[in-house]
Amino acid sequence: MLQNQIQEQQKQLSDLEQQQMEKELDDYYAQLEEDRQKEEEAQAKADAEAEAQAEADRKAEEERLAEEEKKQQEEEEAQAKADEEEADASLEDEAQTESEAEQEEDTEALEEEEPAEQTVSQEQAIQLVRDQQGISEDSPLLVEYDHLDDSGNYIIHVYESVVDNEETGEGHTATQGWYQVSPSDGSITDVTVDGY
Image (tube, rainbow, N blue to C red; front, side, top):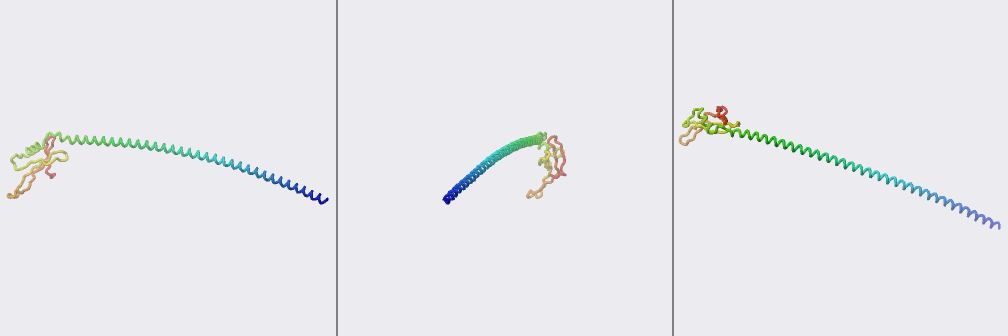
């Protein structure tokens, strides 16, 4: 009988211990669940913050790129404007140069035209030299137009044809003088020393 009581008590004790153990396990699991939930909430919060930061960074990057693009566009427009102004200035310079060149050509043309306003012809220049030097038409001395000098004056050559060999007719010219005749007024200058 006593043994039965002891066994009963042991069983009750065992049940109590088991209940106690189960309660402790339940508390432990509840604590674990609570910790897990807290951790999930913290993770979710961190994820949300990270996403918000990433979005802010993306927006900031977009704004920076847009600002850079705007700045680059402004620089390109400024460069294009500068290039256009330079091209305009270059065109103006070319036009100015062309205008100056045309003026020079006009001046040169006028200068070239001046000899055309001659009052003395080549034939008259030859005759003037004949008259001045007293060379008649039947004189052995020859009076010929040679060329125009740099100033547009006639250069007249006065020479004698000397025959060295009667049989062959070979000979040479003996210059008597060179004369410069102005086509505008017919004035004569002896330029023999210049050795034309």
